[in-house]
Image (cartoon, rainbow, N blue to C red):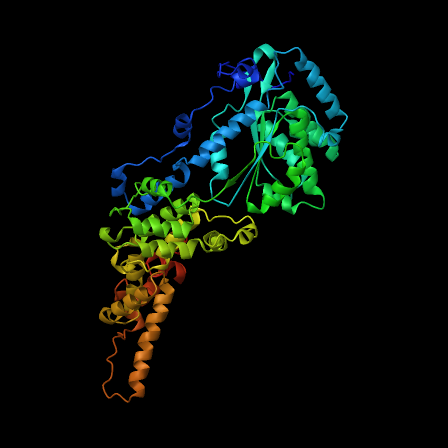
Length: 553
């Protein structure tokens, strides 16, 4: 039972007497720890997010991040969770009753099973009467009811790997795998190798998938590794994907899992949505240990005191400037909208808070309202409406047709809130008034250039300001063009009207010989004073906008 795995990474087994002789005398069970009481399970499972009332004073965009803690860290145990913990606790321990490394028959039994595995003759043991203590169970329920979350929390109360130095044995009490989206058995086997590699820092995937092995070989290798590493429980999540398996694929997968129960003595738990109920009720019941521990139908929360407690806990976590008290109206509304599905209720509560923060114009408006909850539900949860309508009317047939509905994540709801802000016009001052040095340079250069062309500053300045106001990113050349065009249009319009009043020319008629006497801003002075090209002279005197500054900005 040894391999090349580095044992120093794993917890060394500590043997605890759980109170039952059949458990205490088996190292694989005694190393699992005590059997939890109901109160201990509640303490172990419950979770609350960090909350400091001072955070309410933070900026809104910061508080939105705090709100998302609820989706990660808010968990209120219900009676169903206690039932699930008891069942999983028994399934893991029962799988080891026939695998006790202290007994003389242990190695002999292992050799017999490995012989069956290596001959790839597992299929003949699907309906056999082998005396196996392992068992199986199905958990079926709607998306968001908390099946997978609760199972993960319970499984994580057990060590992932335990090393037994006395027996040179590495024990993997449980392992969880998602059913392949197409129900492929070969993909399932590969997922098993990957999951085990992550646990043990091994390379089983590379070893067992090289060379395009047959399905029979892959199955045998999975079974062998379950035996070598004393795997106690395999949890297969998203089992409704088996409905998409190719012809005969679902039966092969189920037969394989049942064989693991009957031959290798590994307990199996299948988790899926209502679409998988047909597989649970039909195929698995035909196998010998298909419903060993029965099935758990994970229903929505009932509208009773448990719902009141759940919402009462949830409403304590408000990052809003105006706290909203839970009353009967909110209790009924949230149950009607979520239909008692915790995941929907929590996400609805989070997104409603985020939108209250983002949309409020004053602290008093930053609160939860019935209208806000209804709006958020309409905007963010329309995809789950068919499922919720089926729950509302107890339409079990419609529920089975709600194939793998994905409940929206909170991120999309928060992003939609920010989209609203992006759509609203920002109240920003015009750039000409901000004192921006880059823009002021453009304005001053434009005015200087136009004045040098003979237009007085009292006419130039409003023209330039109008150009900047209409387009803060306008270039120097465009300002000159728009200003001169506007000036010319005004003159033409006045001429067409037959205006007797003539616009007095502001252009100074100076003889070319006297251009050197003009001001430095006059283009004629620049022309006669140039020592190089006209472009360089204009640039040196600030009449050409340095394009590199625009590119750099």
